[in-house]
Image (cartoon, rainbow, N blue to C red; front, side, top):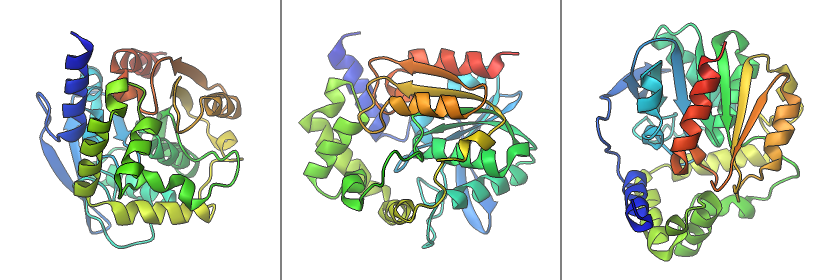
Length: 283
């Protein structure tokens, strides 16, 4: 398959909520709010948590591979995707509490949690706050560990309202050249305008600036078996953070996928999936 065809398929996958053999979308009630999710497979439970501004379909290239061995749930976190978007003061701890309640609603006693970016931050926070609920933990380019204070204007492009914001966002998020192009930046801005999660993202920025739920000095509390997996060319969160997190979580393993940006589970699913599944199935 040539590069142009590959880029076209990637673009379609990013901008469409449909993909081949998509599991049925279901709803759960959590704290009186609708949480939308996809469910597939059977076996030990695995829950997938998307990043900031994402949704459950971000896992379209990973869910089928996981479903061959696991009972997989890909959820729209509160405030994103097709889940309800109450006007609350969103923070990572909010999403951890929602995840615990979601597991209660599905009668899931314990699960492996796989998180990307913000989802990785939520997964790590959940492992600290609800340790008995976590089997294994996969942190993909996880946010939440701060090497220095971050100013709001530095992150504003992640809630894009202009083409300049969108151009910067795609260059920070993706490595594949076609996904950092002018054409794709325009498509990306349209997708973000349609998502309707700008308020949610802005409240997360506020929480971040207040220093809430940071992972600094908390990772040592994680005792679940952990895989830290990172895109080697992540321009949003440096790959050095993978080493930092791996060192601070006792027994953690690290995988770096070269040639991938901030979302290796999407850009490099052919390498991300085997690494993730090998870890989840290892003795």
